[in-house]
Length: 323
Image (cartoon, rainbow, N blue to C red; front, side, top):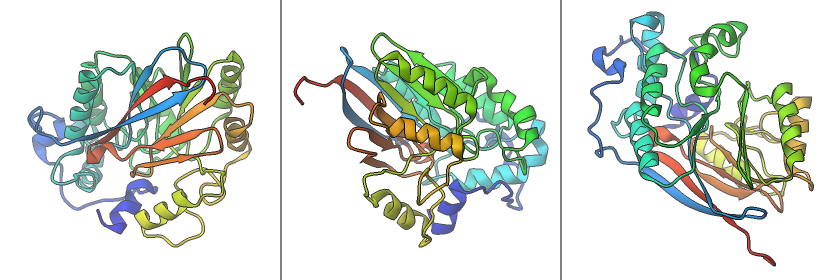
């Protein structure tokens, strides 16, 4: 993928238009690649977590950017076509990659599937329907958190109309909330929606209540957090990937990325604090794999983009005493 395409893939590229029309039946999400014929790469990760007694597995994917359009959203036909071409990696449609990854999740032993944002690219009915139908085949529970493209629509990007008209199209999959919590006997999974590079006060309040429960927390976000270790690995890799030399790379939260507002800053400070029960942060958004300690205790793993066939299978195991 070229530099311009990579930048467009994660920037606010909602006005992109290509002067070709909808491609007929392909935009229904039907008649795609045959099952088993789509190459995918699911990376296995093992993470030791202090305070859990039994292993727990998470299948994590993000950034499939499915862009399917039909006559219910005819006004987005040109944009949908251009965006679907942008995320057609190696000649394979984004929705076929998504389907193959969900099939892989079904075939695995994960306890929970987390969809980490930008699963769809504009809240068009055909895209939403395709994802709903595929998720209905899952034989395990899932959570769906919002990225920055899931409910944008044409020029409506985090606008009042986007929230009022297009976000509700995804409510059935996301439980209609800006955060989701899955609490198990010895671990909590907390997912937070991306709100134009911001954490909402509602999410912060829920997170404050969650961290009081004295259980390890696995946090899933769309936008990654910049490490506070002094390492510039994420910064340099982002610059190289996006072809930028700017001091600020607005694809993660932090000093060299998106400047957090007060609520988001408080949230990040809580995540990284010495008292934080967060053991692992999972994220997407940047479209390439990156694994690094955020501080001395907390690991962050960022998945590659699902439209390329990338996903993570994370096995959480008890940390041995004395380690």
